[in-house]
Length: 556
Image (cartoon, rainbow, N blue to C red; front, side):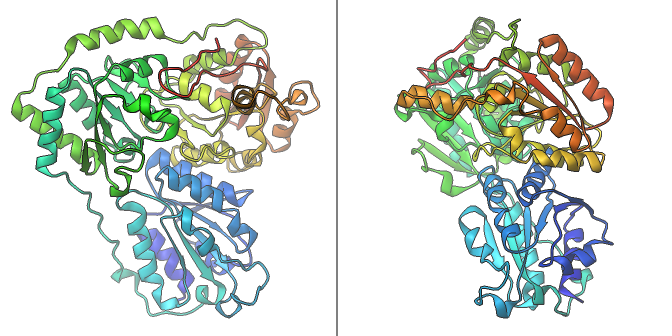
């Protein structure tokens, strides 16, 4: 069997149903067999977008998709997308074409060592020099993507390897089983001893809970012990919005007043599937304080990476939550501080952020109020980076898992639109919306054309403040100056996002008031087409943030 045919057959047997790619001379042998495979292929407009689409696809449905491109600059355009997926623990199969094996040291046309380039940002990379190794490489790649902390794998395929003939029978190929690690019984007992001794414990839900699909088990544990639940940014939607235990987010950027308050009043943190990253913790001296930490994670390398916890538990999040609940029930444990939950209800109303502004130009906060009120509960949103991402994290009301798909660890401008397209491919019957700034729209904005031509409509909301808001906020706050951040042309007509969208086969409109914005969302949902809404907002609004959980400053 020809190697390219074997690769396609293996992908089908491993469960691949959709692929995002751009064909080219270096990968055309593979495309010959992809053409007739039971895999839907979506031709993107930029190679980086292929990886972001596969990333958004997995975040939405937890199925792996390949991102495929040719050699040279096509392959190097993959790097940002692979890094963005890796830091968010998202498995995707990156397949790149390559020159013939004998040309790899000859500086041949579009020949670059992409396997070496991507080593630091992928779970593993391969440049397959011996065609006979392909079945084993593919099998190991799918195993690595799924096992432990998930992540992307890159396979670089020289042209002669793609076209070689090998002895292979797909009927003899079986995917490698993946076993999730279980916690030690002694660690579960220690954790419950610590919880029982605490006066104000809380549960910190991380993105690993979403990846493990452990939201139900974690919620049941929190309900039994009456623990306030704080979600990291990557776990947004992990608890129902109106759940009495939902304390929102804690953090120095996408943190919320209630979450930061509840965290600072805690004396023990049970962190499940979280990485304690800098935008969450801020000043570690404040974050750690005198409180104790229990850290549950599937990856041993996470333990002590930021600071040492008092107890580390190596386990899959779902298995750990079940074990903790089972042991708590066996002990007939009582809630540690039930009065704290009733007090949290009072604080929720007291600390709720205001969003009902009637200003013209619109306050960004009002944009998110209209989004919360107008989109259905199971709508899916993507978000990338910048001040719009921080407003979104703080103000968007998401009550279901896998409905909020951000570029979290990398904060990648350009993820939003291809990520939304990937999510729409995963869930064609649901509303999918990319939320981004006017500057962010210029990163991968061309991918609206893909959504248009494949009739996978997405909605794009541009929070247009004609300003690099987060950069300006950093320049002014940290360094006392402002430079190269003002973009008035994004609002005054010199730059016209409506014409851009129409040129790519989409519908679009510019809106100036909350009433116009809400009506535009309804028109977009009813149109059945990819729809861009350019929402003109106040230019010089900053976002709430600080250097520690104790000093987050409000700018409203």
